[in-house]
Amino acid sequence: MNRCLFPAVLVLVPALAMAKVGSTTSERIPVEVTEGRQIYEQYCAACHGGQGEATADWSKPDEKGEMPPPSHDESGHTWRHSDAMLFRMIAEGWRHPFNKTNRLTMPAFKDILTDQEIQSVIEYLKTLWTDDQRRYQQSESQDANQAENPS
Image (tube, rainbow, N blue to C red; front, side, top):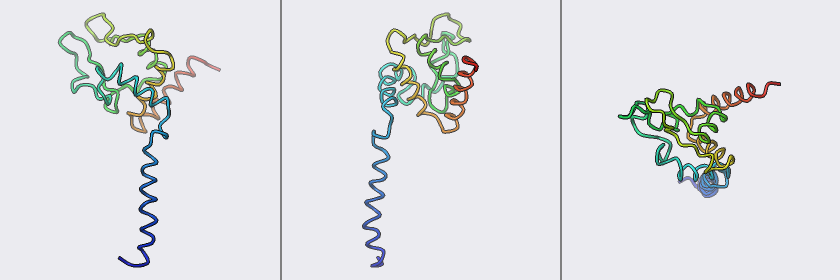
């Protein structure tokens, strides 16, 4: 190794390693997202998958004629809904309009989770999407908010 480069390597390698470690610490993850992930793991992962991946056939009706729980990661459609719609689905439950049964296939969590906990789950879900999907969803949320609260 060139003698001039050796001191630079001694300085740069530890600095780069520290920068990488610093970017992955939980200090950089908002508390709301960390809380949302914990709540998701406790109440949602059993149906929607540990990483929001759902089951391979989530977009096809099951043997009862009900749509299975959808994927919440980038392969799903959750990112197409505004914050208000996601909040309402989690709080009040959801029955897919194409289901052949009348039961809520997504149970209501308003009596189990606080409004803040529901919002934390939504913030966690956003971490499962691509940047483009997050931008789209943010625009949907802003449009929905403006429609509900016109100036």
